Length: 277
Image 1: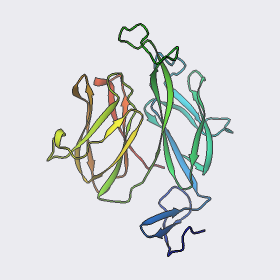
Image 2 (image 1 turned 90 degrees about the vertical axis):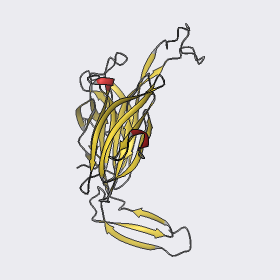
Image 3 (image 1 turned 45 degrees about the vertical axis):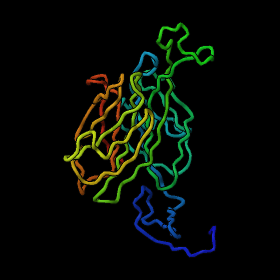
């Protein structure tokens, strides 16, 4: 059913999504284009374990099993370690209830997470832990003895959902920056993509990403020096850095900022293709 009495154009094109239908329809009206995939098209999902081991979460061994539907008797994803992606799962489109079990202790860490997979889409689910200050008596004061230190923290398991894209341009590419670094020293990280004729202070591409969030940007083919910077005690600190080369063969990417106790400043960059089988 069409909402308005106006002229519409139906365009048939190759399906670049994950469903098995060879084509999709685009409904074009004025400046608006609506994608019309096959109602029976499949969907795809994968998971990233951004959970770090902590004294606050003794039941977490550092690896998880994921049951991607309520009816699952066996985990679809087994023994997924920290800071790693799972394999992709092809599923019917629809709504699912996800639960996470520790792979080592068999303790339930998370249950009844709603996972909604529209037809012909590919999603990535990021799991991470946020250490939240405890307010025992609900008075808003988390430092009852006034010593300048939070009395106690509790771990909260959280999720971040991202819809993946395979990219269609050979000149410009989508980068999604994910911040999974929970630090008491800073809450946000600024990521500078510095071209050869720039320095950090003049870089045009410099998204700021708050912990537990994502930012999307588009970069043209070039070579970039990438710096993750946080302000700590009034001073900008380079947490980590890397190089990114984009060319005509490049695909859409995730840049995940993760906690890593094995490196200086305990922050790492991870690059991953958004679109994988």
